[in-house]
Length: 275
Image 1 (cartoon, rainbow, N blue to C red):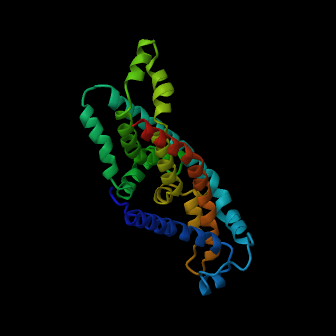
Image 2 (cartoon, rainbow, N blue to C red; image 1 turned 120 degrees about the horizontal axis):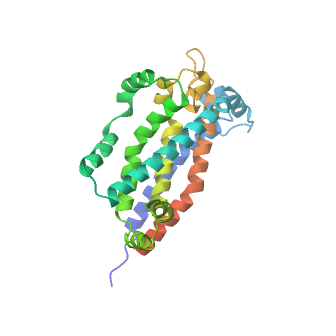
Image 3 (tube, rainbow, N blue to C red; image 1 turned 30 degrees about the vertical axis):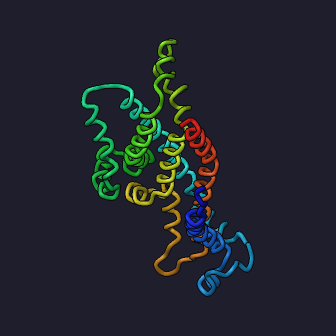
């Protein structure tokens, strides 16, 4: 009988433990920093807060978060919804249907993942100016959608490619229309991939700084990252308020991830059992 060797398992568990620790420690430090004063933060950066007063969080909320959170929610919700919907349409059509220049169409979309968003800031800026969408909400959402579609398309295309076609063919034979098959059969079967696309797109849009900085001037259109940036000053920066603001800005994405990850894990587990 082969003797069980526990060392590889112990090494993997230790590696996972240190990775989790490396992720959690900065987050906990950030939230603890929000309860300190600047003096204590720099004199004893690893010490526990002397009190858990929410003053810094209130100041951060009143100064930037409260005024910019609605804009970030609008950009994230609309941008993510359009991105995932268009990506799923394009991916499903590419997987299930044959059409002229299909291979070129696929390569064209995928090549978008190789273009750094910063490299196209000036061309997009000129384009938005020419069509009078500069400094508007829709003018900011459109670049978000354009830059997130290639990744979401590839993710969904990969998932749709391995979906069994038997169920769809049965639905065709029973008289179902293509939109009924897509929304009532393909969508529920692709929940894990769709949720992953939603999390990735919403995380990118929520944390964006460059697009919002270049494509908006009106303070009423600024998102949370720009609001946090306004807390910095060349003469004096209240770092504990900034840490409190960063902590507040991270809460919505933490809630989104925690609320969706159970569906993602359930689908992955179900898929592994079926496989």
